[in-house]
Image (cartoon, rainbow, N blue to C red; front, side, top):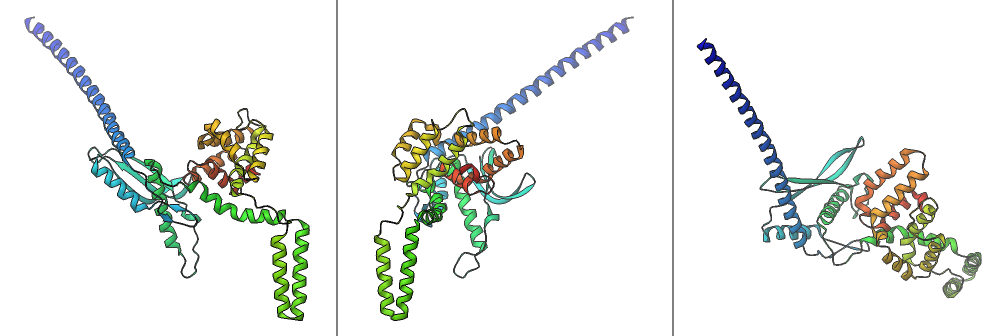
Length: 361
């Protein structure tokens, strides 16, 4: 009987010890998980502090290189500035960029993968920037860029864009917002001027051509004289249409889209259709003061988020086919690196897209 009591007592002690050991083990595991979470959070906090210090310490990089009618920032200068700030401030942060392929909605997309990381902890943040190399074509003309050169330039451009956007690097001169519209609308402006030319002007130019042709039959000097007189009469005449200011085209697509969406939305960017027409007329007269003042009273109109939400809301209300709304969302994703934070550039790309240009008509 005594042996049994001892055995039962031992068993009970063993059970008690096992329970205590299990509790201690669970407690230790829980503590380790909590410590791990705290450590991960601290690593992220330290990384974000270094990133913030980097952003705040970066000076503006001037747009000192010339492109086709605009200036842009030198990629190498940007990289040097970033590395200098990291070294000077002894920041625990580094970055790498490399072109690669990523699968998006079943398609392979060429992207630049940019990774910022902490050398001490190994924590990192990455993001992809589409580079649109599929849109490039080789000119095949001597002394002009070949396809490999174009691809190289494209990669450099989007590497620069990714760094500038992620680190909020300022520039001394901001001309990117209108460089797109300059290039896109030059041809439209010429077409508009040609379409607006009155029939009398057309008839007048035909008369000059006929006179010049007849003069050639008589003598070369007569032809030259006739052409010279004809040019002077056309240039000095009052029949040519007034040149429409380029700023009109910067805003036209945005205002036209606002007119289309006005009746379908509860929250409209402009008070009335009459206001939109008034702004269009003033811009044609080279007066943008009123629309600029209006944008100052509604700062949300300057943000890209306001307009993308507005467009998505409009398409959701008016399109019965959900694929159209989904297609527009994909369009925004693909084009975001190009239009950036500029609503004017966004509507410029919408107006040039065959699927969505109707929004700006």
